[in-house]
Image: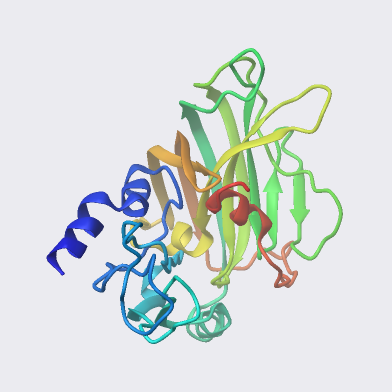
Length: 298
């Protein structure tokens, strides 16, 4: 049993890769307090093939934007499973669904609105996507599961409902040519949303690579839960209902890995009155961008 613990804590590639930000960033997994589950004989119990080194190839990983709503309860193998050279794992988790949380928020929180401004934006160590060894990056704000009133670079109001279909003109900065360390001097992007904010509402500070003759490429992004942004533990509103959040060298993600960093100042103004221009109902659908950021590309 001591050899198994040494194998897990000193040589486990999954734990090392997550710790280094090389894969499945922000996912969690519980310690394997049981024997390795591979490569076993097809019989009950843990009996290993002598030609192979036992290993922990069967795992359960989990992730939640707010960890208090997803709590692991049990994590164990199935030793009596005898039809494979793997022993499958089973886990039990206590989950609070988004629908339950949103219903609670609407019952306990008064209506209102939030104006969110993004400024002093800069990125470092972005990936090189062009053949020249550089990129032409710009920052674009996208979101899922919430209706947003956005202001673009020309200061035109764009009401972007999650229920709308077709292409959307997401608010974005000007692109900067041939750089992996852009500083978007003088640029500011602004969003407005109504509260109570749904539990599943997501914001993505997305970095794109501009291409003249083809579609722009997704470089990386910072996913943020809207509720954490406007009402998380780090938010402190003053007597004028204003708050400032400073992200410095915050890791960006793509394909489940760290992919550069971003620095941005976020100014939030809270109002006790809903914005009458925002009155849509966000549609529940599968989030596509989050998958691209959190999962390794096949």
